[in-house]
Amino acid sequence: MREALDRVGGKWAIGILIAASAGPVRFTELERRVEGISRRMLTLTLRNLERDGLLDRHVHPCVPPKVEYTATPMARELYDSLVALTSWAERHREAISAARAEYDRRHGHPPA
Amino acid sequence: MREALDRVGGKWAIGILIAASAGPVRFTELERRVEGISRRMLTLTLRNLERDGLLDRHVHPCVPPKVEYTATPMARELYDSLVALTSWAERHREAISAARAEYDRRHGHPPA
DNA sequence: CGGGATCCTACACGATACTG
DNA sequence: CAGTATCGTGTAGGATCCCG
Image: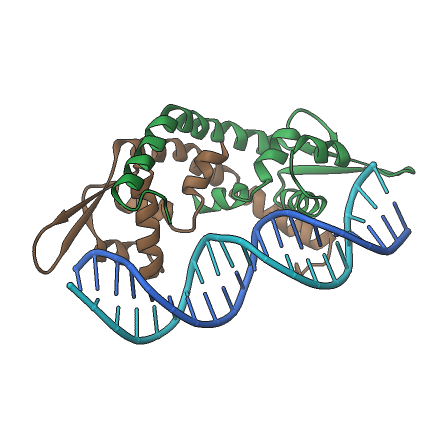
């Protein structure tokens, strides 16, 4: 289970996976779609996802360069599994923030 | 979605949740069951899980102290959602390690 | 027994500059 | 366009010691 979470646990992996799940996307387009990501982290996370077989990287030999990334079927299955998690988060978001407020009230209100 | 992952993304949260899902568990028992965890991380992670309403903490007023932790229904639902993820990991574990080996072969074999 | 306080290290990540 | 290289920072987590 940690295996699966580690693969998607990074700050940007999911965002990239989602952005690349709807067909080939170019590097710069990813940079735009995954809001707030730095060039460096985009590259690094892309390499990791590619290494794990979650992303296909296709280089068009031309100038200027053109590289397209596409989520593999395996990545799409992963995404489907994550939907259950999203649903959980939505169902309990309110309860969680209530629990937090309650906890912070009982112990020092501002969580130090 | 990041909301959900962040809650369970820590190194130890899942292990603790699993260990505490089968009824009340004491601190020291958790320390034994969650292999490799340090006293510090156990305490910290327990606090976070309690704060998010995923664990109930019950203190028995006696000496020596006795504290029992129990997963809440919300936590059990979370665990159920995570099962899909586990299934994904099992189905593709081989493909992933193959992808990795292939990647490492094409680029510098030892991943530096 | 069930912690809290302190110190330290590794690594994830951000900012910036350079390049084929 | 699609990166790589370098530097700096915050923080997760480990080790150790102390306490009611």
